[in-house]
Image (cartoon, rainbow, N blue to C red; front, side, top):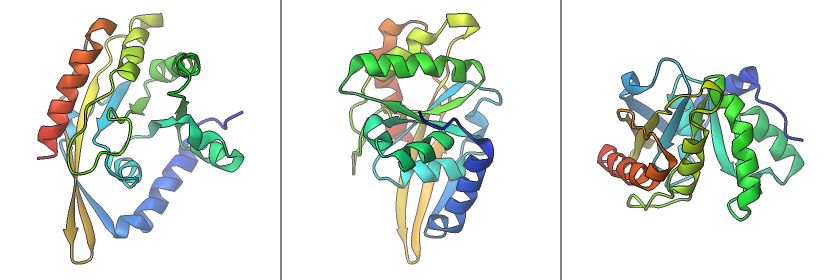
Length: 201
């Protein structure tokens, strides 16, 4: 069984990131006013390298839950670590397992959680890749359940600028998007990817 989310452990991990790789990858954040003051919300960043994950966590002032591929949860220690840090496993190869994970996500959303979903689904370097709409469609299906309203999807651009000592990471947060029905998932995903491309410059 995966360990449940621990806010204290999460914030300790964020502090540790800032003291280590945060000295090489220095985030600069714009658009924090677009983040809802109260959750739930789906944070949708550009994905090009593994540092995207700690950079988003270090830059945003909120505790985050990450949708992550199930393969990362197969090692017991890593599974416990990711669970305490807010990881939510998704098995893309087994649709029924993915649906089960998303049912478990409903209580998180009802509690006002901020969920990080990389809509490209994998690393895409040098450009913005096509978004995968299936997971967004599953999230839209949760709307209306037990009082859960329209979910805001927040596009986030990440751009890495090489400097003499490390990198400056430009993180641009855009205005929220939403869709009333799962049948609009493809259009919402396309709109999100367009916004992310513009935020990446």
